[in-house]
Image 1: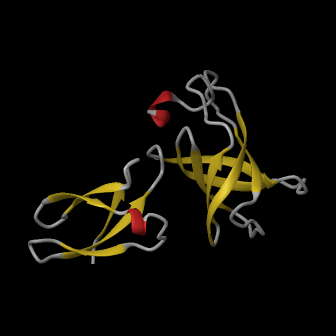
Image 2 (image 1 turned 60 degrees about the horizontal axis):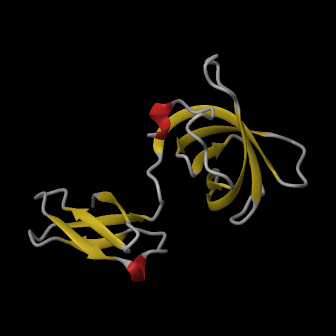
Length: 155
């Protein structure tokens, strides 16, 4: 069964698009907003599919960047990461080592660019989601457009 992603707007509505027939429908998803697993939906064309509700305030851009993280305040040891997605408000990455990080923990993330036109990122973040070695985090302070990330990643 196919799974699609639907972004939830400020009014707790998501716009669903049937992958089979292309029918569009806007539905109120307030009671499902914090659900972590996809919803099972049936279209008027009788096709069934799953919908993952994404409540982020900004869409994340897929990427493949290297960097480091450490748990605050106690960890002095940095762990290597591969960044999978990023936005002005948050970041998702895979740790390359085992970790003890859990949802709600505070971490510091450091990314360095090879490109001379961009500075380094050194940001604190709150861990919002943990699944094995994948962590989804929200920056304490949003990235500014003049900060390290190339503009095409922040659009």
